[in-house]
Length: 276
Image (cartoon, rainbow, N blue to C red; front, side, top):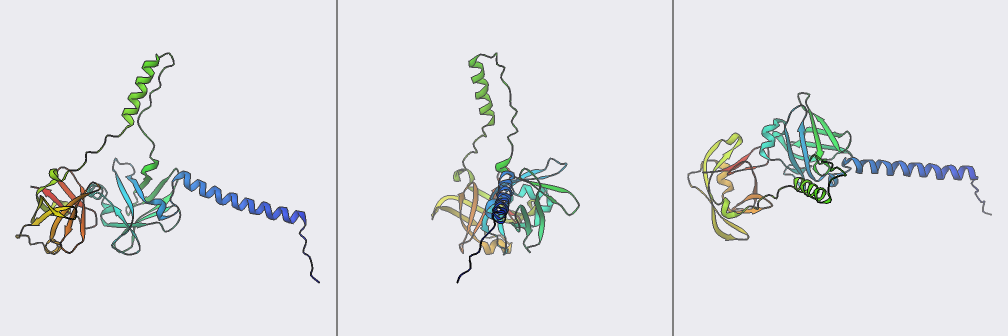
C-alpha cells in the first residue's frame, strides 16, 4: 500500500517564495550586467572599447576580436600603433579573454596578464598598471554623447526651433570616413619596424592587378631583413579600411593607418610601411 506524502501549505508556500526570490535575484544580476555593459562572456565583450589612463589625456580605441590570437588560450586584439606609444604598458599585449563575468584581461603572448580589468559601474572597468596607475576601459557603444545640448526657448518661432534642432543633429552626426582607394595607396614604401626604424628594405605596391582581389607587390632585392625576406610579399589589397600584404606562402599581414602615408601592424613587434 502506497503512502501519500502531503505538504503542509506553509512549507509549500515557503518553497515557492524561496524559488521566486532566487529567480528574481538571478534576473536582477543579469539585468544589472546588461545595464552596466559589464561583459558576462567573451562573446558579449567583442567590439570596440575606449581605454584611458587616469589623470592624463591619453585615450585610444581598441578592438576586441572574436578570432583566436596566435598565442593559444586567448582571442586577438586590434591595437593601433599610436596606442602602444601613448601607453607603453600595451606594448606586450597580443590578446584578451574574459576569465569571469564582468572581467576583461589583456594578455601578453606568454598568456600572462598585462592589465586585468574589473567591473566598477555604468559599464566601466578599471585596472591597475605596474606602477600603480589606473586604466579605465569603457564599451564604445555605451559612451555617453558629450555634444552640448542647447535648449530652445519656448517663445522661439517654430522655424527657429526647427533650425536649432537641425544644427544639433548635424553637430552630433560623425563625419563619414573617406573610403580607401588602392590608387591612392599604390607606390613605393620603406619597410620600418618599432619606433619608425628603417630596415633598409623597400616594397612597391603596384596598381596592376594580380588576381584574387589583390594587386601586385614586389620586395626590392636589396632587402637584408631576414623576417621580411621570408615573408616575401607578392600582393596587397584593402580590406575593411586596412592595407593587407599577402605573402608568397599564403598568409597575410594586416596594417593599420598610422599617420600620413604610413601603415603599421598590430602586435608586440611592430612592422609597417612608410611612403617614400
